[in-house]
Each structure stands twice: as structure tokens, then as C-alpha cells.
Image 1 (cartoon, helix red, strand yellow):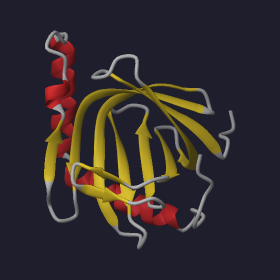
Image 2 (image 1 turned 135 degrees about the vertical axis):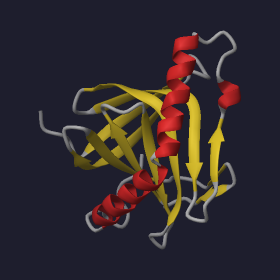
Image 3 (image 1 turned 90 degrees about the vertical axis):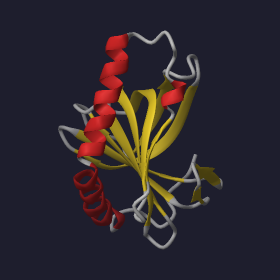
Image 4 (image 1 turned 30 degrees about the vertical axis):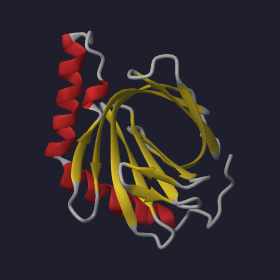
Amino acid sequence: MPIPDRITEIKTSLAKPGRTQSFACDVALRTEDCLVVYYRMTQDYILHGIPLKAGNLTVGYFWFDRPYNLYHWIDSDGATSAWYFNIGDVTSFDGSTLEWHDLAVDVLATPSGRIDVLDEDELPGDLDPALRSRIMHACDAVLASLAELTSDADITTARLLATVPASPPVA
């Protein structure tokens, strides 16, 4: 099935049941294992001390066979602001809609060497022990491969930036 130029990313959350977030994203790359999308920030945010300005680029890596995804945040000068790994699962992709379930725990890394494991406190107290273990193993896998994952993202994102319009449409 051909991939449209735009898809909708839909995020559900373990920590916030019933909450759904939706983003219109442009497709940058599709392989058998991964969908890479980009999204231009529509407003300023500060996430865990990282300033994300309106117009900055988020490159989202969604692997179909990994228990995490990655948002690679790029500032207006093309430099990495941070890499933000969400522990979670792609639950479906039909060619135009990507759905994924956020399992609360995140790993934030910055070019300056900051590494934070975030939101473990958002895991429900009554969470199934097997799911809790799977979440923590996924977090450990990200931390164990962090240098390789961020380097791969840097290389791929740099290559993709050459094909990304300066101001893609924002929804």
C-alpha cells in the first residue's frame, strides 16, 4: 500500500487512560521496520527543561518491532536539541494512520550528555508485573544502546533534512 505524503499519528497513554493526542505528520521515510515522520512545532513548549520553539522540527522514528519510539528534536539552526525516547508500542499502521500506545516511561538525552529516565512515577500502582517488567526492560535497552541509537538518528535525520521543506504545512 503506498504511503501518503501525510499521515495522522495517534497517541494513547497508559498513564492517562482515555486521553488521545493526534498529530498530522509528513512522511520522510518508510522501510519494512520503521516509519519516519516529521512535524513542525506549532507553538513554543518547554519539555523537561528543553525549549522547543514554534517552527522547530520533530523527526519521529516509529519502529514496528521495537518497544520504543524516538522524537529527535531539531532547532531552527538544524542542531539537535534532544532525543526523546518513549517506551511504547506501535499498535497499528494502515498506511494513513499510525497508532501507538505510550507506556509512560521516557528517556531524554541531550547533546551535552544529560540523560534522564522520566515518568516512572506515572506507572499505575496496580500495573501488571509482567507489563511493568517489559517497560523497564525496554528502558534498559534504550539506555544500553543510547550512543548507537542517537548516532543513527543523527545520521538519518541529517540525510532527511535535505529533503524536508523549510516550512512544511502544519495542522
